[in-house]
Image (cartoon, rainbow, N blue to C red; front, side, top):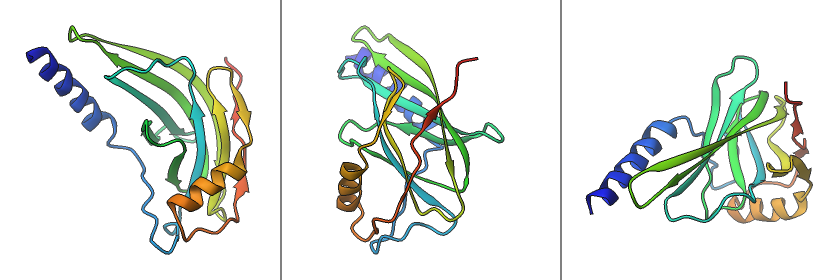
Length: 172
């Protein structure tokens, strides 16, 4: 029993410390995106991840100019698409971290470099960056389905969006 409490404590601390930079969108009921921000949306796929009761997936989104965190996104199993509010700038989805907890109280982490870049311009309110397969580094355009999901989640948003599919930087 104490092993389970220990595991929950470790994952709780990881959540509290690791997710403090998450940028959630506080979209008003009328569908307005906060002033000075754009709503970025898309979908991240990882086929190599195995379902596990103690399993967390994080993506690190960095500002390309200064390297600071823009989003530390924890993938929610119930949510297919992500929605981030970001100010204008150049960004990179830098890393993918998959943390597995095991019954014995130990854990392991699998970290992958993604290096997917995208831009947000000052006039953008909605930016679609694609359905991103991080294993094969292929980007698909499912913007029609993504817009349906977006309208379901945020009823007042209009359909006017910019499509800027993510581009993968070459490994150095």
